[in-house]
Length: 135
Image (cartoon, rainbow, N blue to C red; front, side, top):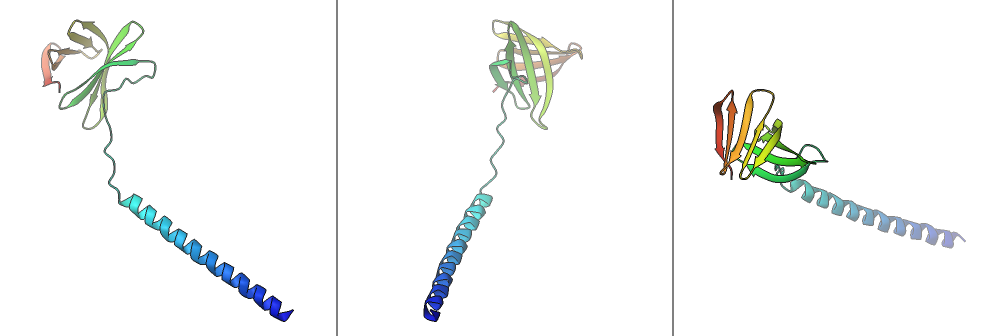
């Protein structure tokens, strides 16, 4: 009986040792995976023209050196949406008119916007304050 008990204890000890070493190996593998994941470079944020409301459809997106612009539609209405790139900020959401190759919009702050022939023109009180090519 004493010998059987000794074998049982030794058997339990071997199983415990095997389990401990398996757990240690698993922990090592997990820490290596975690370290590898931490060492990966941060992904660049993906920024592109978007419509600010989920019920608006993006018809066309534009990009200039300083701005992202989106022509959005909700029902029969068109909207021009503009974002400044640095720092990222929404700068305009205005009803827009679309005529052939020309998109125009005016907001309530005396600003007017025109996209035509690959150029964004922004005016304040009739004076051009921004004019940039669309890439």
